[in-house]
Length: 296
Image 1 (cartoon, rainbow, N blue to C red):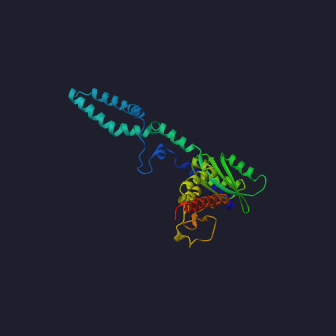
Image 2 (image 1 turned 180 degrees about the horizontal axis):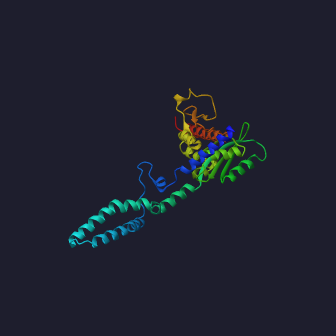
Image 3 (image 1 turned 60 degrees about the horizontal axis):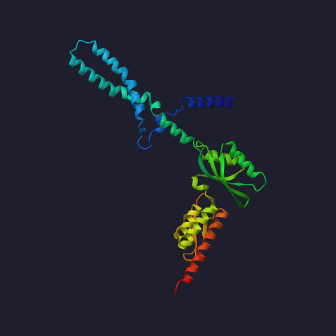
């Protein structure tokens, strides 16, 4: 009985919250987060709204003043002052408040289209290395309206690490993406917002950076950092490195000694490590050739 009572109380609370939840309004959707101001509405709509609100006021004031026995000049002054005050203090604020949704309808449509537009995400999850595992996770993503734009598979201890570039509905957040990956059998999943640059595959990016290193071998640390989306760890911080969790990568260089890269929360894959080491080998070969070709 007690649990049934608690359930009923919870249901009443949820119903009250839904009833009294703040509704999405033009002011809430379009107001600037810094100054709180809304964008200026189109001039044609603003003019139409002001005319619609001011016309009844003008007609009413004229009807009242014309019936009086005031002198002509007094009537003109009363009409002018009364209409001006009513327009400034009543008509314009009323138009801005009552017709706010109509005034800002074009901006609202654009804003909602942007919110509903697909968003790009990078995702990584570990799957079991067995038939049907990839089909299961892709099915879970498809059921949630998520489109797979790119995929790379990396063998790792305990299974395979699948790296995706995903196009998800704009309203979907990180928690929902992680839930979809989990429902598909993924474990140790991570997701990050990304851009269209993620569609450039790792091999193409590595070749572009290899051409950069061929021109200037000392660009190796910066090129590897760009390739991996990582940060170069200063030499003073390297001795204090904590237990290795796969988020730090060390590569050798011919002139500076080992260089350490860090990417917190996103362990380096074996393929990424191999690409970084191949770039280091290229830089070392080019540096050696340059040294032997220079005169003594």
